[in-house]
Length: 531
Image (cartoon, rainbow, N blue to C red; front, side, top):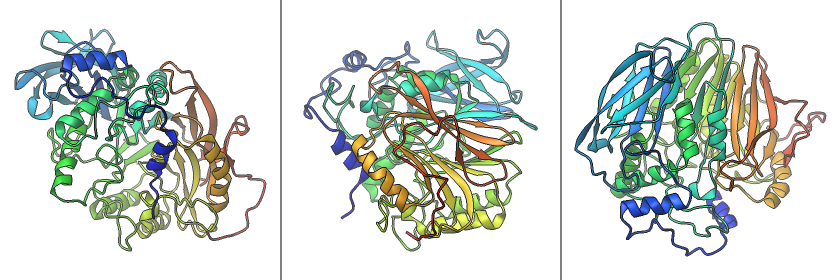
C-alpha cells in the first residue's frame, strides 16, 4: 500500500471542529459571500479590478500584462457585458506621466473577462509601470521590468511554491513584494482543489469556500479566493513572474495524459481558469486554449538561462519501465536546450523533486509522484546533461513544503557517479509540512539513505531568493516567523553557494550553525554506498 504524503500532512495538521462550515458555503449571494470572506481575512482591490494586476514572461523588448474584471470576485459569472473594452498604459514612471505604450484590449466573458496584453517595443533591462482602466475605474499601478541584453553583472530573483489558503496568511508574499528582485518564479500549487478542512481558528486561520472544485465556475472562484490575500496581489504588482504548475491546480497527483472524459473536462476547466488568472504568455496566441504551453527558455542577458519545465501535462502513469514525466516532445526540447546552451548559469524551474529520496537506508522511494517514479527518464536526461558537457546547472524546486539541498548525480544509486548540478528545494509559502517531531526523527534517516543530500529543514515556511553573478550562485533561504500573522517578519535562515565552473554547493560559514534537521558533515568522508 502506497501512503500519500499529502494525506499524511493533512491528517497530521487536522484538529478542532472539522465539520465547521465557513460562511462562503452555498446559500449566500456573491455580495454576501464576499463580505463574509473579507471578515475572515480575504480582501480585494476596488471593483472591477478586485483581483489586482500582474505582469509576466519578461523579455528584452516585451512583457505580458494581466488583469481580470471581477466586480464580484466570488461570483460564478460576472454581471458584465459580453465584451468590455479595457484601456492599458505603460510608462517610465510610477505616476504614468511618461507614457511609452498604450492601447485597448477586449475582456471577454469567454475567458472570464481576463485581459492578457503582450506589450512590445520596450527597452531592455529597465523598469516600467502600468495600469488598466475600464468601466470608469482605474486599477492599481503595477511595476514590471524587461530582461536585459548583453553583458549582465548580477541578477536576483525569488521563488515561491505551495500556498494553501487555509494553512496561513501570505506573509511570504508580503516579503517577496518588498524584495529587490528582478523577477519571481512560481513553482506550482498556486491553489488547492480540495474542499473545506475545518478547524478555524484552532488549526487553520481560514478555509476554502466550499467542497472540492470540479467545474470552470468552481476553479474561477477558488483562484479569486486565493487572490483575496492582499500580499499575493502585492507580490504580483511588484515584479514580473515566470510560472509553472504542479498538481493541485487541477487535482492531487494527476497525470495530464490519463483519465476518462469526466477528468479531461475537469482538467480543461482547471487549465482555463489558471490561464484566466495568471500573467501567462502563450506561444499559441491570446487564447492559450485548450492547453496552455508552460515550458519555455528565457535568458537574462549573458548571465542566466532559465528553462521552465511542465511536469504535469505530458506525463504518463508512475513507475512504468518506459514512463515519462516530460513527454516525448518536451524531453526532446529539453535535450536541444542543453545542447544549444550558452556559456552561462543554467536554471531549471522544476515543480517537483528531481533528486532521489529514500526514507531510510535500504528503504523504498518516499514518493514516486516526483522524478523517483520515472527512473529511466531521469537517468536519460541527467546522462545527456553530463555527455553534453553542460556546466553550472542549478535546479529550483517546490512541492515538498520543506527545504532540501541536493547534489545532482547522473546515477543517485552510485555516489561516485558524475556530479552535474545542485538542486534547491524551497520551503512552502504556507502549505503544512511534517511535524517538528517527524522532521527531527526522519531528517537524519533521509541523510543516511541519500548520500547526495546535503541539507534538510522542515520546520519553517517562506521562499528562496537567488543572487547570481558571473562567479557565484547564492541561495538565501528566507523564512517567516509565523504563518498565522499576515505581517510576520522575514529573516534569512541560511545561505548556500555554488561557484561557477565547480559542480556542488556549500553552506555559508556565517549561517551554517542555523537550525536544521539534517546537515551533512563535510569534514567526514562518506564511504561509497549504494542505496
